[in-house]
Image (tube, rainbow, N blue to C red):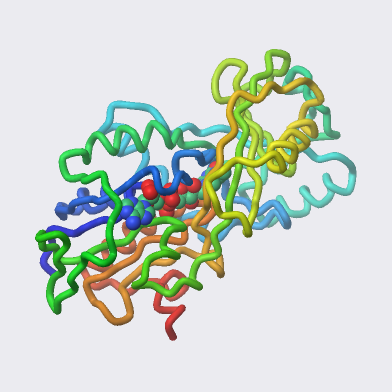
Length: 348
Ligand SMILES: Cc1cc2nc3c(=O)[nH]c(=O)nc-3n(C[C@H](O)[C@H](O)[C@H](O)COP(=O)(O)OP(=O)(O)OC[C@H]3O[C@@H](n4cnc5c(N)ncnc54)[C@H](O)[C@@H]3O)c2cc1C
């Protein structure tokens, strides 16, 4: 395929990481996006972690995703002369001997679980509910997504039109497509959960999950620069400011914050510290989760110049860099897509 003039719809995490990747491969593109339509990438905690806590197993493809992720964001940081990639240790409080035994057993098989437990007194935390011990997860951290997206959007401002894409205006030809009198070689839809409104794609691929977070103020606690996860995560945003998240909701898919989520999150924060948290902000967004928890990428089953890059779900930070490259190589060099992520699995 001729390597120019792609049209990207959406500039959340998916569209933005894809734009960087196309640029790295010297492929030109334009972007149409209305950031007001979906806030998932703007509200996300931005954490990455290679462990599934239910059984302490490694998360899917963790090793390769992590190494690609690190390279990608650090390269962008260099380009932007800014910092938004932070390696931060993550602690799992272990309440009793059974939980400690379970961790120790799992750490024999999962190299992301530190086999040496940490005792609460070693950490000098202030006003935190002491567990019996903490398990330390290796290779965890956070991307400051607001900073990454803001700087990326400035970088791509000259090729971005800030408007809502109108599906009725697209004319799909054999070898190109036309949108509002402009011709493109192909369009790549990166609309997040709003893909469910795209008439070109099967609505049942996604199972969007709303999530809410609280930004909290607390002058009495100190958790250093650790992320603590206990039914939720808590991390220090800046002096005295913390983020606690996140909730999961599958029926109400609006962007509105709710009292129910607020109470749920305050309860979760109280499991980590029984001190007073003042709410300074409540945020909400809808995750583009897929029904089988795998990304949804690739070519439309009928229209060869229509693609999707979606389904990043709860792990967008880790998944986006690897799979943006995977999709780019597929489009440009015809490299085969992994069947687990190929959107044609929903059409077979
Ligand atoms: C509360 C919460 C916490 C989270 N925490 C984490 C975390 O800690 N770590 C992690 O890895 N992930 C986290 N996530 C998930 C993460 O946010 C997503 O995986 C990721 O941001 C999805 O990016 P996206 O670009 O696919 O979707 P979106 O961010 O929804 O972006 C889609 C973009 O397309 C635009 N768009 C859609 N339709 C149109 C149209 N017709 N015309 C123009 N523009 C359009 C939208 O407005 C939007 O800007 C969290 C999500 C939530 C809600």
